Length: 299
Ligand SMILES: NC(=O)c1ccc[n+]([C@@H]2O[C@H](COP(=O)([O-])OP(=O)(O)OC[C@H]3O[C@@H](n4cnc5c(N)ncnc54)[C@H](OP(=O)(O)O)[C@@H]3O)[C@@H](O)[C@H]2O)c1
Image (cartoon, rainbow, N blue to C red; front, side, top):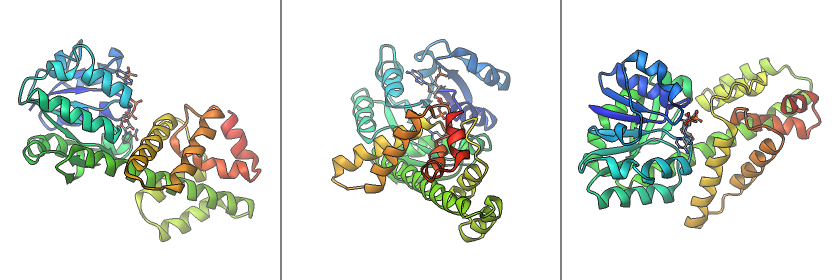
């Protein structure tokens, strides 16, 4: 397919690279143009504007947050005013349910097709085309997007015919990931203060809970390795904020979500913007008076 790709951050650059490897003709745009250099070497064409990247069969976006998506999609010379009728927007950013609903309406008014296709997996999984994609949207639009989704994913799920169903599933999944980080952080604080070797404990966990969330975040918390960030703390904070907004509008109390909201506020207030979101897993150790965690957050 002739596809535009907008947003070449930690995830987007790798995803666009895999579209090229799968044989798609990619025209890439990024607000900071320098980040497109590696993709050009891989065979992408670079667009100077959002509009130029929106002239093909489809355009895929992988942007930081609602504000970025609003400005790129709905702003002056943005995607909705550039995409031809019948062409497809595949939105992979983790955004609010409310914005996804709005994008559905805006695209539909212009005869354009829109699906939400948020992803699970960190930048290493994106580089290896091993993401889990959860798509939402009209069946024929999802099928039209399938060659793009399969180029970046190990599994593609369809959440439903409403695009925002996929956004809600994504937010719920990151709530579960953040809850695992919190509980791992509490368990590590406990065993560390009790004098137990953290790496040995990690091995024990590996045989009890052998799933990606425990393996990935257990290793990061055991090693205190929160830099460089694969998924930056402000983006994790954003996901919990969006989760709570969705819970609020659906009338669902999520007390654990409130606790995670406060964890991110604490992390960012202590200068954690540059750290990986799993650094909230160091806060229970800090609460327990363990010096290493305090040093880690202060550095
Ligand atoms: N990292 C992960 O592990 C992961 C996993 C799954 C889903 N996600 C989600 O995927 C999305 C991207 O994450 P990421 O880690 O790739 O983030 P990132 O590395 O921070 O990249 C963000 C991208 O958004 C662009 N951007 C930000 N604000 C913008 C604006 N106002 N106008 C235009 N472009 C703007 C950035 O452009 P510049 O280069 O110019 O700053 C960059 O291309 C987020 O929604 C995140 O929640 C991330």
